[in-house]
Image (tube, rainbow, N blue to C red; front, side, top):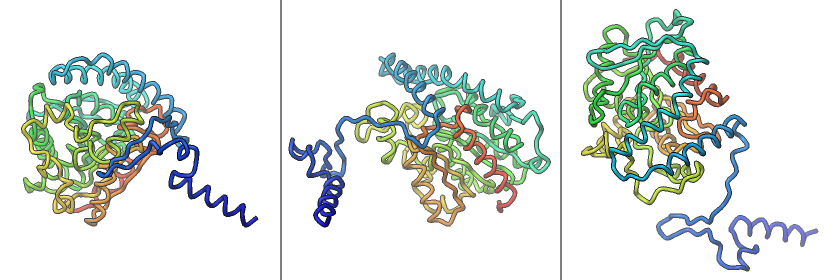
Length: 370
């Protein structure tokens, strides 16, 4: 019995350190750690997470097939062509998702230009709750990106408006795609200033996802610079307070999504080449996560991500930084879910995420000092 226990312990330790099995007899383990800390991994099959819903698995396979077909058509290295291709693909992918969202979360959408900035004012058809009549949310999803913010704003604004029974003002793209940093942040500040004439700052919330999440963080930093009062709360969805193409997840998520990992240090996306052209990517007004004094003055912050989200690392890092600065920060991570997974309202995880967002703003708006 004692010898059996010893053999079992030796087998277990060999498995932990990767020695002692057939791989060691046949040659060196193909997994290796390089001197710079990078890991060389062999080809492998990675199963879809058993903790994610069947709906999430089906949606992932559907999305991966569409993405593979789209990538196969990309032959141009021109930034202009890439922008057009990304926009065309995103509109084709997101339009049916928007239709499903509006069917599941009925709202009234009224275009409104606020001091020269285009917005969509989204209100639940069931009416705004009496407790939320003096509150409002600003959605800044993708004003700074190459995709269509007017689709994104409705797509994420409708569920939050219905579940929170609150008005959402979603900011859209400018007509001129050539605009650059910090003009999108300035647009958010214009709308914020206008709403401050009607709403107390602690009754105004900001939310955005992906590029819009970074823009929401940028807006909070910009408000500090402009000596504007602090908003009541902010939700950063699939984004932290720095560029999201950083950390482990920017490499691992690509593989989990069925793509090859990006080349080392090749993190300049199409958006960087367009909106952030000529910008210093270390500017704290672009990446406020680089400055603890800016983060320390953040309002209560909600962060949402998934384990297959390219932005997971920067989301987790931003949460850690906010907690270190004693900011009231909440982090939610959905296992097996991808970047902006909540756009697909068919997923139970999506419904869970939107419920968390609505509850977060109901809890914090009106409770924090401006």
